[in-house]
Length: 227
Image (cartoon, rainbow, N blue to C red; front, side, top):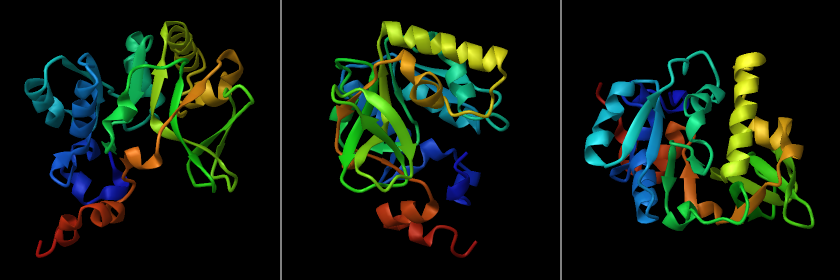
């Protein structure tokens, strides 16, 4: 819903906000196409009808509705597309892709695109063991580590496992308030051997607030004036 980007997002869903002329989600779609990925599922909820043009503009896009977007966390969005998790790449829809190579579908093991940061940041940071496996995940750390970016990859085995864990958390435990990433990174981390696919933190950008948007695209600085 992009609450922190209001009043702009009162009229448009956050992924459809244009940054320097292109909607955020379209930078993702175009990036996926550049990597020869065409089977794309987009979970929609808030102002869902405004995403419909994407299915006409781009081939092989399917919209999947999450009717619980207002009352449940993003675990409900992943639950809506759980059948497609095995052999898939997950990408947050409210990001701008600057380097399309971050969407490269090849990988040695399931895991996340990540950028090494010498200083801690207020983001999800992975700690790796000697073999490059994620052994811990910390939020808002002051230590060096791997900042997880909004792209993850899941092979058939791990994707099937994640689907089953998701169904258990959602259907049995009624865990509606969780982030879906909590399952592989926290709740069931020991059932995986997740790695990182190295990237630069400048390859992809999540815009958190209207102020961030104005800094990146100055044309928004006059938005709403005179209204």
